[in-house]
Amino acid sequence: MLLLIAEYLGIAAFAASGFYIAVRHRLDLLGIYLSSFLTALGGGILRDLLADRLPYSLTHSLPASTGILVTSLLVWRRMHQHPWESRTLFVFIDALGMVSFAISGALAGLQAGFNIAGVTLLAFTTAVGGGILRDILINKVPYVLHGGFYGIIAIGIGLILWLLHRLGWDHPLLLTLLFITGVAIRMIAYRRSWELPRLYER
Image (cartoon, rainbow, N blue to C red; front, side, top):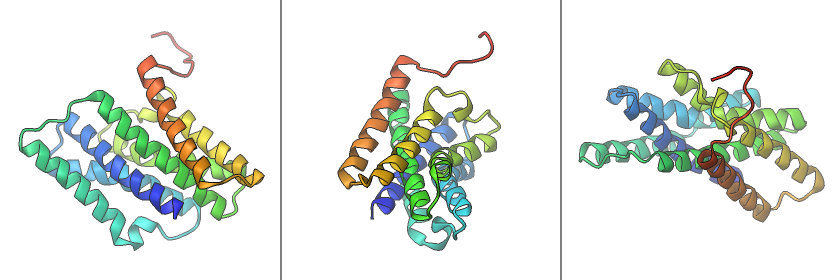
C-alpha cells in the first residue's frame, strides 16, 4: 500500500515537472506529453527492469492515466492564459516526485530482497531515471549530474530505508517523517544553493 501511494504521488508530481520543463524549452504538444511521460514513468520502468519484473506502468492503466490527466490539466491551464512560471513551485513539486520515487524504489528493492547496494541503486534510479531520460530528449546535461544535492538525497533515502528495515523500524510513521525530511532538505538545498564540490573553477 505504501509503495502504491509513493508510486502515484511520484507519477503526478513528475508529470507536472516534465510539463514545466517542456514549456520552458518551447516544445510542441507532442513534446510536452513525451517530456511528462518520460519524467513520470521512466524511473519506475527502469526500477522494475532492474528488479527483474514487468514494469508496473506498462501492465496497469492507472499510471499512464494519471500522467495524462495531470498533463492535460496543465495544458488546459496554459492554453487559458494561466502560465506557471514559479521556479520555487517547480522545485517543490519536483522534490515531491523525487522523494516519492526514491521511497518507492527503496521499498521495491527491499521487497525483492536486495542488499544495501541494490536498495540504494533502486532508490536512486527510480528517483532520477525519468529526469535523465527527459533531459536526454531535450539535449541537455542531466540535472542530477550538476544539480546540487538532488541525487544525494535519493541515495540517502535508500540507505536510511535499508537501515530502518534491518532494525525492524520500517513503520508508516517513520516513512512519512522520512518523506517530509527529504522534501525539506531538497527545498533548503535549493534556497541556499547547496552543491557538491566541483573539480573545476566556474
